[in-house]
Image 1 (cartoon, rainbow, N blue to C red):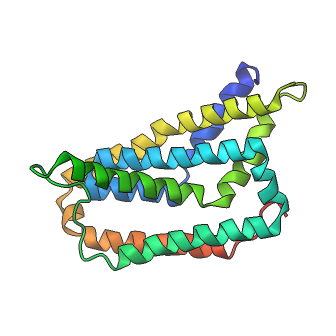
Image 2: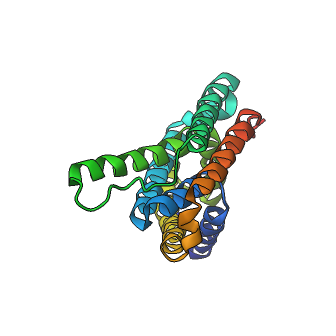
Length: 217
């Protein structure tokens, strides 16, 4: 593990990187705006779960495969791009900005299904983006001391720290978006327009991913 100074730099860099808007942040914010803070936090947990998949994949060498194999990178890239654009089209075609969390009086089982859907979509938004795997492969090793004997364990521990470190940022996005949706009436009334704006942004992220090259090349 890095020394205390390097560790603090790693934490600070992680916070700055997680503050940068992207598909994950957009999904967390849109979920919280539509369905409240709890849905936003569930979306954040889905995103972080996807990050854990990338950390383990990078530690096991899958990230290196994506970095060196054009075919593997392209297949995952197109899967991720298609999923982001599918989400965008789904939002564009939504009839309204109603809550995805069922109202009081509806069974807890139905509510759990909706929260599971929020979690699953957050997970897929992250795990189908090959650039996340390449990010961990490029970022984390910089903070592993050259003389470290068990680099895989060090990588996993730093990846765990990065993901846990991201939760306050992601939960903060969810809380702020949920707070805004409860207190700003215009946001609630114009939610269908926000769905469409989010849909266009998801399609944009999907197109950007589809047209991108492997950053390791």
